[in-house]
Length: 127
Image (cartoon, rainbow, N blue to C red; front, top):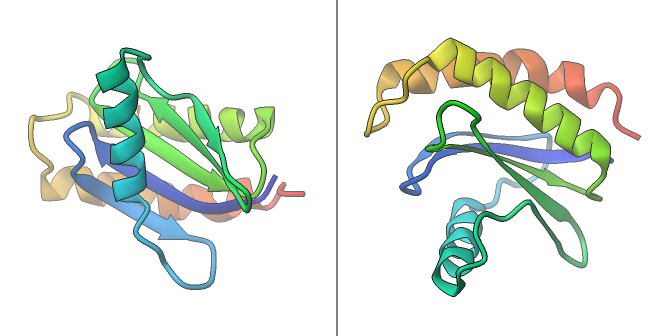
């Protein structure tokens, strides 16, 4: 499981921070918003993960801050991707605290610092 990108969003679809491992950055926020919207419209609830031909997407919602969404774009969905996602979203929730109804510079900065600090550390164990 190799991480391609990490995206943090507000539930309203507002991007908070996105980081790609390497290569060309792609807009994945519309994909996440579309999947979440479709799942809610059909009454399926939240999405856990989606598999595509070339990659997989793991989506996690904050435990305390339900409006906080973290997605990992990975080459293959595995339990390791969930563990890494839970680790990251927990650190973000603790740092940000109560998430406001809108995205502030403080939320962006704290999220960016955590993702940038942890990205190389959690990518080190990719296989």
